[in-house]
Structure formats: structure tokens, C-alpha cells
Amino acid sequence: MTAPHALGLAEAAAQIAARRLSPVELLQDCLARIAALDPRLNAFVKLTAEEALADARAAEAEIARTGAPRSALHGIPVGLKDIIDLAGHATTCHSKLCLDRVAREDAHVTARLRAAGAVFPGKLSTHEFAIGGPAFDLPFPPARNPWNPAHHPGGSSSGSGAAVGARMLPAALGTDTGGSVRHPASHCGIAGMKPTYGLVSRRGVFPLSFTLDHVGPMTRTVRDNAILLGAMAGHDPLDPGSADHAPEDYARDLHRGLKGLRIGFVRHFHEADTPASPDVAAALEEAARVLAAEGAAVTTVTLPKLTEFGAVNRMILLPEACAIHESWLRERPGDYAALTRRRLLPGMFLSGTDYVQAQRRRRDLVAAVEAAFAEVDLLLCASSMDVACRIDDAEAVERTYPRQARTPFNVTGHPALSVMCGVSRAEGLPIGLQLVGPGFAEALIYRAAAAYERAAPWASMAPTPG
Image (cartoon, rainbow, N blue to C red):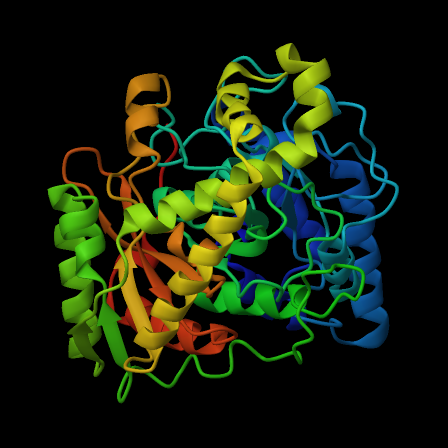
């Protein structure tokens, strides 16, 4: 019999609904897995085990009383990146500046998952304030990669990626401003979705950039991801960026396959703009071949260069971040990690003209991607151009972190999913691809990703953390 911690979200939900597994048994096995692995992986900032166990017992009692779980999330452990509020617990943002910042209420997304019956075993590591990179001069150590703890797991949703990748939890939430759900998803071999801008409320999530921030689901499989997004999404009138979009069943088309879909392969991102490693390039080409073999029409498409998307992202993100951090940067600059401070400070020297011009150019980039979707249904492109480097190699981290193709879709707001598409030959570390769709086309992305997942071997692979 499969150990409970090894079950994905949908598998665990089915076992709970069939009364073959209790929420308490599932949580206890996950907590045992956390106790065994987290001393090496540092995925958790704080465990909330007793509170989660109480909620798991309540879920078990409710299911026994009513005869059925209230949703597929009922009794399922979900981790929260520690910039997402959980009532009664500190939202530390992995920073000395927020160690005593106790949340008075749940974030909107936390409340939605709680209403669905999810339980919350702990708060997960992040890069400080969801910017920078792995740093060793913070109150908590950086999370590590479950495939090889000597390497980093990606960021900034680093603990979320490590916890789900290591099978400590079936699901977790991350945030994504320049790729921070998809980066750890790619490096930890899991599925990570940056939804359409505004689909998931950011209220109760510590902001980095008001117009670029997203909250997204991180899971082991595409089906799990679709289920979790369905519980997270929903209009929030108290979030100014929230979209008034009707709820959907994002898993509805997972069985349909790829026949009839047109997929545009953005090859120039990894071939010319930011040349990828040979392993990554080969994995992307093989993924395109698999998608075509499964019935998709795969053609090459051209978008603006990665450098343009990256420059616009920086010119928007940095001033918005500095508007949030201005008083701390002036009064307590020494309380940031050196890397975080170095990332934030340039925003203090950008002008209003820089910001306005970036927003104007942003409209052009959105239009360019929209024009591509007039010709194809989905886009395929790289996520990271390299596999994860060693976490203690600061020079390699600095060099490889920006070598990615995730930022374009924070600029444009289109939904983008990362799934595993290979393993590097030398390091044995995961490689990820992205599937990108028009606004609010998450169900279509999941349809294509599920077909790829069935046709490729990667979803069945799991790390053995050492």
C-alpha cells in the first residue's frame, strides 16, 4: 500500500472519500516525513502541527457525520509560503523585519482553502520578501533542493517547491512576480501555475509589486494543480486587482488530449535571446516532439525579445517594491539580507518617467502576445535555461537566476504553467517547460499539460533527498 505522504492531492482525496484513509492519518504521515527530511531541506519556517491536527480531527469527524467530504480539499494538508497570512501566526516574510508580524485574519486565499476543508501544517520558506535569492544572513536558513540538497530549489517560493517535491506535503501555495511559482516548480520537478492576473486574490499576501504579483498552486501533478486552483480562484472586491471572473472546473478537460490544438513554440527565447544549456534545449525539443505526436500542431512563433520583457518587469517591479519598503530601507537597511538590500535599492533611484514609460511599453508587449494567440491556442517555451546550481555558489546563483523565460508572462498577465520535461545528464536534476495560454484559459493549459504528462515519463519520477 502506498504510504499516505506519497499520495498526490487527488489520490489522497479519493482515499478519504472512500473512507480508506483519514485526514488524521494523512497529516500524521506527512508530519513524520517532515520530521525526517526537513532538517536537511529547511522547507519550513514554522510548523503548526497541533492546530493542523485539530483541524484534521474536525475534518474526520465531519466526514463521518455527513458521509462525504465537503470538497476534494477536505482534510488535505496544504503549505503556505510565509508571505501568506494564516490567522494567529506570524507572517515573517523570512525576514528579521517581520518576525513579530502576527496575522489577525487569514489571507483571502487561505480562507477559501479553509472553507474547502484544507488543513495548514506550517509556513514555508521564501526568499526574503519574495525577492533576491538564497541567503544565509537571515533568521531562517534557505530551503534546499529535494533532488540534491547541495543545490537550490529555485525561488522565491523555495520552501513550497521543496516541500511538495520531497513529498512532505501534497500541495502548497506560492507567489509569482517574476516567475517565483514556476522557478521552484521547474527545479523541484513539480507543477506550478501562475494564473491569469487577478484570478486569485492577493489580499492578505505581503506585496512585492502591486501590478505583477500573483498567487499560484504548486502540486505534484497537473490534475492536483487544477483542483487546487479551483478552490483558490474567486473574485475578491477588497483586492483592487481582483478579476470578476466566474468560477470554473479547471479539471474538466484533462481527458481530452491534444488533437486539434495549435501550439506555438517560442524557440528564440532559449535559442537566441538567452541560450539554454544543451540539456534544457534538448528536453524542450523532445517535449515539442511529444506534443506533436499526441496530436497538436506545433509551429514556431516569435515574440519580443526576453531582454525587452525583463527590462519592463524591472522598471515596474522595483519602484513598486520600493514604495512598499521605503521606510524600512531608510530606517532599517541593515536588517535586510545583503542580497535583498542589493536587489531593492536600485528602485530608489528610478524616476516616475522610467515607471510610466515601462507601463506604456508593457501595453505593447501585451498586444504582441495577444497577437500570437490569434494564430495559436497555446505557447510552449522554456522556464529556466539551466538546472539548479549549488546553493553555496553565489556567483553561479547570480548568473543563472536571471536566465529564464518566466518574466514575460508576469508583464502580460497571461496564465503560465511549468511542468517537468526532463532530467539533466550530469546532475540528475529536473528540467521544466512552460505552457502559456490566453487570459483565463487555465483549463486549456491543464488539458494540454495533462496530455503531455500522460505521454511523458516525468510525472512518475520523485527525488530521494540525501
